[in-house]
Length: 189
Image (tube, rainbow, N blue to C red; front, side):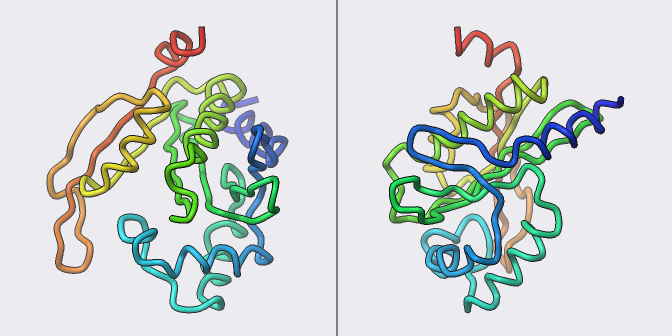
C-alpha cells in the first residue's frame, strides 16, 4: 500500500474526532445556517475568504469545498449546544508526508481556547496516526490572532513572504509557521 493510499484510508476512517468540548465531524448542507452566521461576518472572514451574501451561497460553498472532497475537512461543533461554530482542515500532501492546517472560527467563540483545542487534535492525528513529518499553516500578516493560535500549538515562525498574493487591489504578505514531527514529540513528552 502506498503512503497516499494509507493516508486516504486513515482519513476516511477518522471523519469524527472529539475533544472535551468539541466534536470534529464532516461538514454538511445542514450546517449552512450556522456557517452563514459567521461567514457573513466581515470581521470573521476578512483574512480568510470573501464574505457570504446569503445562506444559498453558503450552501454552494459547502457543496464545492466540503462535500465534494470531505476527507480531512471538519466542522467544529460545540458539544454542549450542538452548534457548528467553525471549520478546520488538514490538507495532506502524501508524497511529501506533510500537511497544511487551515481554520475559521466564528467571532463569537474567539478567545476561548477553542481553536487551539481543535488544532491540537488535528496535530495529534496528523503526527500519531498519519505519521506526517511536518504540519504547517499560513496566515495573512495583518492577522496576528491567527498567528497566536499557531504559536499556542507549538508552531514556529518559518517565513514571512512579502507580496505572497493579491486580494482585490491589495498586496498581501503571508506568514508561514510549522511544527515538525521531532518538535511535536518533544512537546508532548
